[in-house]
Image (tube, rainbow, N blue to C red; front, side, top):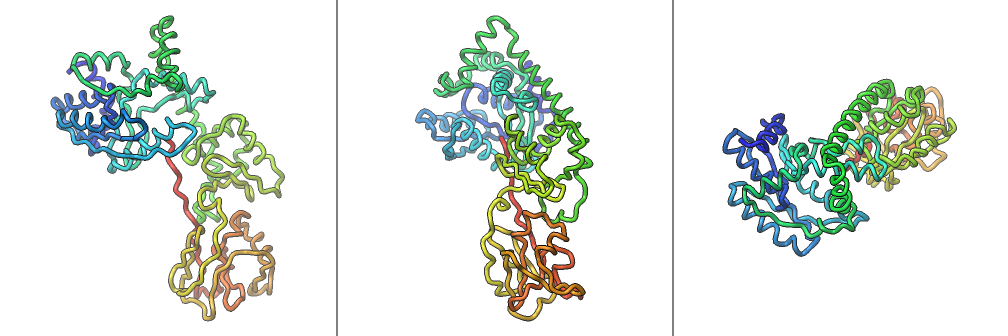
Length: 439
């Protein structure tokens, strides 16, 4: 077993019991070496099932021949290949759009607990760190590419991050491997290629270990990011307080514990909390957090971010995305009150128990509604909702039940969602959004 094989096996040790390892095979030098190494290891060690995935973007004519090359390579090595054809969405960054399409296609092929193995190496890590440094990234960005992260039902793993590209090239030459060359890799008009072909080689002439040094720095930043994450988790504990509206299914934090933190720790805690929900804004855009935080008590401030928006209501922060950002369409007629009613853009409503007699209909607030409350007489709905503490942004979409044109129930509000006798209750299943993966 040579040194590259030993390094690869050590990097993959935590995942030796995975159901399968899928190799992301572009047909280029790096992924071809990764595939070849794994096949050699399979002859010496008991490994999970090996499979390969080639994603064809159709972005350039040269790529049309790559699926056939990958298939011939996989046939020769005895590894099944799946070719995925994808359409790349129009975007300001074609490179990023292609990467997202590639990961999405690979994610669809992963079963529970399976791995997607990619061939990024130490030089790629150095390029990533340098590129992000020039873009003004913080600690999270300067941590570079992690060796592993969740992807679909499984994990994306980069087992060659500790290996220099020169070692891969030397192995490919020794084993007489053949591979395809992507013409776009020579285009120094692309920022990453400019770093790869112009800047990093110039630095290496003065500092030969620059690649290893930058990769080591990325590792140190990853450790710092881990410590910041642990601090954020501690700071978020009191902010994740219980509240009566957990049934809304919305991410939420209590504001007061965050206000006791320094501004730097506020940003750190919020970055950690928001990271699974939306791309982080540039530092200049954090002024939106200050505006939301410092707005008057009776204000309803909004901080708009990439995948949604943060709102403040009744001393809490609420994350809204997807359908919550759109006004729902009017409820359709409720032809069968004993069945749940789908509400366009607003989840569903259901009567639990024996439906009341009369003509039933669902509506949303328009203003000026009144409701008879036992023991209190007729009351303005606006006042009743204020008393309930229901967040203001919810009140315009909470289902209202009318019987023969009389408002008789407000979904989700205890004491207003049905009669005291408990014969029936109006239940609302709020909309649930699916957050996208950031690749």
